[in-house]
Each structure stands twice: as C-alpha cells, then as structure tokens.
Amino acid sequence: MATLTSRVLRSARESEGTNEALSCIGTGLTVRGSIATNASIHIHGSVIGPIRAETLVLGRCGYVEGDIVARDAQIGGRIVGRVFAVNVTVEKTADVKGRIFHHTISVAEGARIVGRTPWRPPSYFETLEQLPEDRP
Image (cartoon, rainbow, N blue to C red; front, side, top):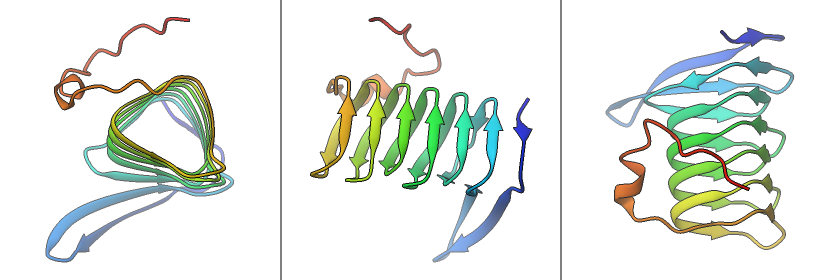
C-alpha cells in the first residue's frame, strides 16, 4: 500500500480526441509501494517501489528507487534500479544507477549512467509480467 506524505496531483484529461489518463506525482510527495497504470505517469517527487506504466516521464527533480517497466520512458531525474522500456530517452539531467533494458535508447550529453544498457528485441518486453532476478 502506498504512503502519501504530501498532496497528490492526479488528473484525467482528454487529449486531441483520445482519452488519455495522466497521473502526476508532484514535488514534495513521496510514494512508498507499487504503482501500476495503463496510461502515462509523470514523476516529479519520489517513488520507493516498482512502477508499471504505458509511458513514464521522470522529471529532473524526480527520484525512483525500484524497477520501472514501461513502453516509453523519458528520464530526467535520478533512478536507483532497473529500467525495462522499448523506447528510452535519457536527458542530460539524468542520474541512473542500474541497467536500462531497451530496444531504442537516446542518451543526451551530460547524462550519467552507472550500469549497462543492454539491447533487447521488442518481443522481450511483451513477456515482462515477471521481472528477471537482478544479477550482479
């Protein structure tokens, strides 16, 4: 169960004729526990626990300690854990400690990654109900 230590900003919006749900975790908010959504999530606060989302945007002030599974991941903040995403964008403000499993990846100059970035075919991500055990 998630513990909320500040206020949550959650909103649903209609985007250009499609129903796109967007969840946001604002600065000053820490969530402890699992987060799962079939839509987009923007994180500007802290999450301690695993995250599953269609699209994940980690703002430059955001922090995640745990595994991330998403179709698309845009990383601008700090991560301690693994990322499993078909498409990954690592911005210059990112600080990642862990592996980034991807099909396509873009890393901006100045981004910090301490870990490997193994390539995987798209079919690999279709079978991620159970995450692989972390190996040193």
